[in-house]
Length: 196
Image (cartoon, rainbow, N blue to C red; front, top):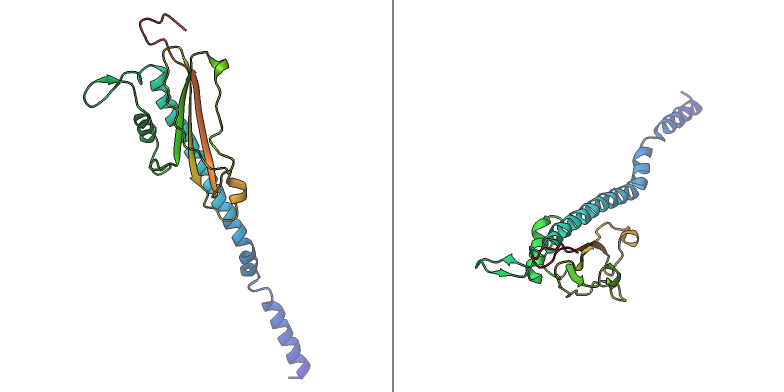
């Protein structure tokens, strides 16, 4: 066998083997971007589910205020006393799964404000300070019959997806603010109130 024949065979074999492994190299180039986008999509879905769960919890707990049940919230001793801020938070947390939101600590903030002048007098402030940190909210006023009440809840959700913090985080420390609200007029739940 001549030298040129051997060279041609070697060249054909190298040419045939030249595309082996190209799929692995292409996958290695595309995989990081694919997995980051996959993680971001899953995290965004979980985040929106948590937002929906928090909104549902706020709506259910706000219904206690609207119907007057929070004015006469029965305690363990059987006494009829108004609901406290701690009881309101406990009620919200009992409506939300611990798998979604961690109610311990300052990650969950809420305020309840009543406006006797109606919807025109209602106002609120941003829950974030100038540094985009969640400020402690302390207002808790469930109002009286026929008062307009605004219930707001905020949760600091940590963003885990690497590289997508710029797009998903809207707070300091790579966190995303989940915000919910319920605005309503209290029902005329007292015997002295004929209608609103």
